[in-house]
Image 1 (cartoon, rainbow, N blue to C red):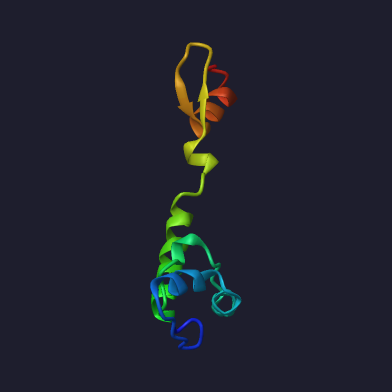
Image 2: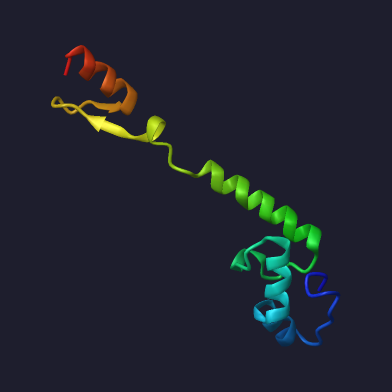
Length: 94
């Protein structure tokens, strides 16, 4: 495992168990990457960094944007975006 300092592990059980060991956790922390379930099985530094970059990009895409995604319902049951609702309310049309 590159993350652990090129440490070798004999047997599947020891290999699986080492992802929660302090040496692996410390290596991940030094890379600035959280040691989450996503990284279980990743032993190369470059692979871990690429996966972390991909996960950060995915998280940024999934962040709720109230300006675009928040919906309001008027007294007639029409569903409007936040911006449209506020514009109509300012004009006194609601």
